[in-house]
Image 1 (cartoon, rainbow, N blue to C red):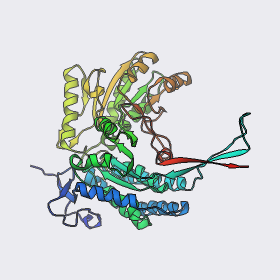
Image 2: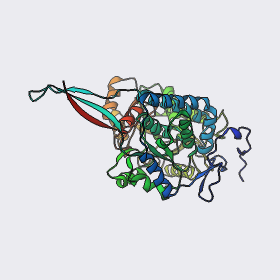
Image 3: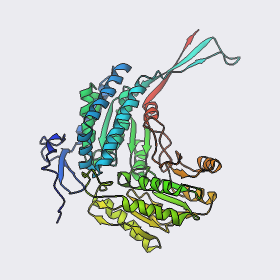
Image 4: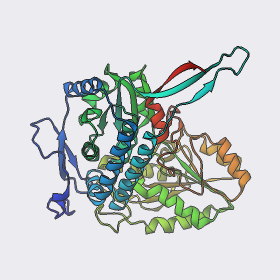
Length: 482
């Protein structure tokens, strides 16, 4: 019997924006609070005709917003979100099970994304070239300008950051005067719907952004193949990303497909600081980040001391009721995911790993979990374990660390803990990843900086506000006599 406290009769209930207040007949999707399993909202279950109509509306609309108008819309949206910080954070917690600490941070990040996108809207991003640079040249100048896509951007987002994953696609679309049809995951659609309302309130013409909620088995292919789509931008798992790559074919694709990110702790590292980074990198956002620490490599000379320090951090990491402001970690997205993490850890233990803490599951609640004596062939580190698991592995020297880090199919990000510049530069040059963070978690970045991976982590097309604005535009070249 579920004895967890209901959220339905909470005194804050009336402050929530619930997307399913209207009645849509039988074509609705329930949104459940992972902590209790309660239905907290219903959203429409779109048909293929709904999706096609959304793309046609977007394609037929011709945006005329000036740079300054786009700037004002994005800045106002940021102010509106900041003013509703606690309300929006609570909404995200109810649809995702993420603890309120994490969702407050996420809403703060969303304001940063809007700020950077607003600034990007003002950037004069053209270039100019003299044409008399060789003996074949003429007295002319070549100029470039960036234009929005001729067609529509199709965006598909995952559950792990219900607002931030969405806003990283929507804000650059607005900044570049594009039109977008967005399908958030059916697991966490509420923040996306709220964001659309905020942008409309800030002055965005509604045809520039449509949000479609529905069953991916029914509508996902249309999001990829619709005749009006010019760009498909997707964040999610590798199998779906590879399916998109094959299905969308000739359309521009921006695929961010997750990671198996390491943190490497050398024998000269500050052990307490490295343990703190490993714990926060593993457990924040319930470990559900493509850049979460998913493999921990400790030099064999300091592995016992480091593991003890990490064990103390893990024991101190509280988990439970996501709405409790004192709790460090809420649930994972659903019970099925929690069962997968439990099974992978049990398999690793059966193969010789040692459980030091955790591996406790109750529905979608899964404890911070620390294991050591882990080997690379174990599924818990061979695959992307998208939850709060800290697997500790050892290495002998820099060459061994680089070999083990690069042994995975993924190549998104990494963290490195060492004081030696020569070792740092070896990792920077030789790790097959999109980014290397020294004395930081793999997930560290600014919202404006280039972000993305290689190998199974993505196609090399970067995200981040600045790079996304480039990917959402076409370069036109023209020349003039001078």
